[in-house]
Length: 508
Ligand SMILES: Nc1ncnc2c1ncn2[C@@H]1O[C@H](COP(=O)(O)OP(=O)(O)OP(=O)(O)O)[C@@H](O)[C@H]1O
Ligand SMILES: [Mg+2]
Image (cartoon, rainbow, N blue to C red; front, side):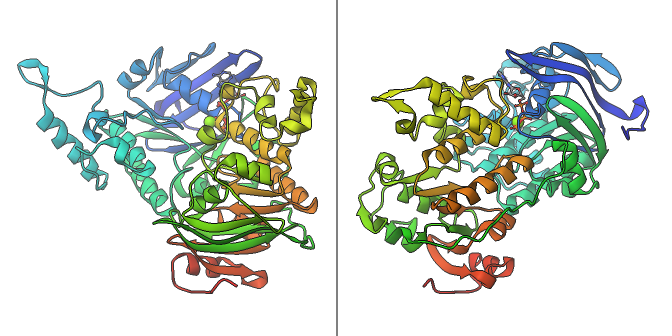
C-alpha cells in the first residue's frame, strides 16, 4: 500500500467488498479509495472483478459484504437510483441511453426540469438550454435535440458524460470507454475527463490499454482474481503494472516466428460494394499473417465482412486454394474454410444463452460429433483445452456465455475460430478488450496456426500489433487498398502516411 492520505481527503472508500456468484468469488475483500480531483485507474485481467466492483458502486449489484463511504459517511446503495442521488454516475461497458430519445431527454432522464407552479409539465426550453450549456462547457458540438440513436459511439459516450455532469456527480465511473473510439475521439475523451477532474470529481477509469494509464490517470488500483493487489501512482512503469496484474513476468509480447510461406490460400479480386469498397484485390498464402491497417472508417471491417459473406458484394471474385467460391452467406464462407472473428463479438460472435463449450464448438461441430450427433464429452474436453490455453476465467465450461466478463466473452469467440481450424482465419481487432496476458496467448496461437499452414488476415487499429505480427501489411483508405508493405517497408511512418493519404504505394 502506498496510500498515505488521511480520511479527510478521501471522496469514496469501498472496503471489504465481497461478491459471490454461483461457483465464482468475483470479489473477495476488495478495497478502493478515490480522492476528489483524481483519475483513479482500475486495472486487472479479464474477469478480475473490475466491472463487478463498479456495478456494486452503481447499485446494479448488491455486495455480499463490505462498506461504502462517501465523503467520510457510510452510505447504502441498493439501486441505481440511490447511486445517482448520492452523486455517483456509472458509464457501463454497455451504455444506458435510450436510442429513441433526444440528447437532452437522456441527459435529464428521471430529473426533468418542471415549469414552476406546474409540476406536471416539463420545462423543455430549460432542458434544452441547460443541456446546451453543459455540452458547450465540455466543448462538445452536439445538438441537444438530436436523437441519441443517430449519434456515433463516441458521441453517445459524451452524452453519458454530459448526463453525469448535469447530475453534478462527484464520482464518475467509466468502464472501458476507449475500446470503441478512434485516436482522435480518445483525445477528446481525455480532455473531458480532465475537465471532470478540474471540477473536483473523482473519476474511476477502467481500461486494458495500458499506455493510457500515464496519459489520463493519477493513481492505479490493481485487482487480480477478485482480490485487491496494490495501489500505485499512474507513473508506475508499464512492465511493473503488468506484473501486478498477472502476478508473473510476461514472455515476449510478440512471439512472431518466421514461417516459410506456402501456396496461396485466399485470393480476392476486384471486390466492389457501392460506397464502401472499391476494387479491392489481394491474396494471402499459407503460413502468412497479412495485416490490414487503416484509420477507423477506412473500410477494413467492410472488406472482411464481405469476404465472409456477412455483407453483400456488388461484384468481385473470391478464391480459396485456387478454386473460385461463391460466398453469399457466412455459411458458404465457413464451408469454404474461411472464418471471421468479428469486431463486435458480443452481438455477432457469441450466443449468450449457450454454454462456453457449445459456443466454442459452433463453427466446427464435425470435429466433436459421432454419427451426426454432438459428443458432449468431446465438446467439453476441447473447450477445457482452450479455457486453459487462453486463461478463460470460469468455474466450468458449461457456464452460459452471458455470465462471463466482457473480455472473457471475447476469448470464447476467439476459441471458437481457433477450434474451427479454418484455412483462412480473419481476425477483426483480435485483441480488443482482451487483457495483456491473454494478448500474448492470442499471438502465440496465431503463430501456431500459421505454422500449421493456415493463412491469417488481421485487421487491427493497434499499430504495435500490426508491426509486431504481420508478414505483409495492406493499408486501406476510403474503401480502397492504397498500399502494400512488406519486409523493411513495414514501419509506423509508412503505414500512417498511407492511411492518411500522404503516400501512394500501388498494390502489386
Ligand atoms: N451476472 C453474473 N453471473 C455470474 N458470474 C458473473 C456475473 N457477473 C460477473 N460474473 C463473474 O465475476 C467475475 C468478474 O467479472 P467482471 O465482469 O467483474 O470482470 P472484469 O474485471 O470487468 O473483466 P473484463 O476486463 O473482461 O471486463 C468473472 O468470473 C465473471 O464471470
Ligand atoms: Mg469488465
